[in-house]
Length: 132
Image 1 (cartoon, rainbow, N blue to C red):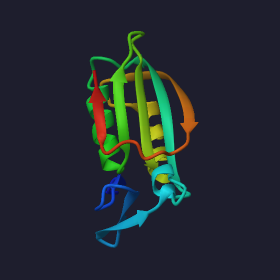
Image 2: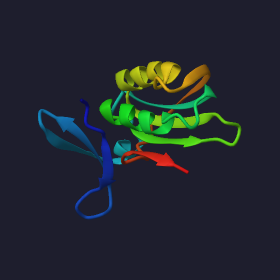
Image 3: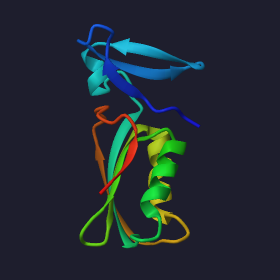
Image 4: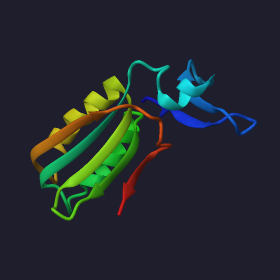
């Protein structure tokens, strides 16, 4: 299981710090690139819209569980058009596994189509949440 990346202020509350898992402890990387994600070439963000029978079947809770298992941060929410929207960020390998999962969804859902948009990693999330 991958641990999520954490972005926060340094001890003085000024510079952005990217906390990355490193051999069982957290390693701080400082500077303006910590907030932008420039230090992590393999860090990605993806936005997904999942269509089909995806509401009312624990899709959001399952997506949250899968994202946490993969060490991703972001959010998931139901849309008025009966689709589900997800934004996830983290290591590229985890993002690709999450996208593959979204094409299947949980056993209680039927996924007909997934729209995918790659975005720049920006470290804006601290966990993976279900939004209303």
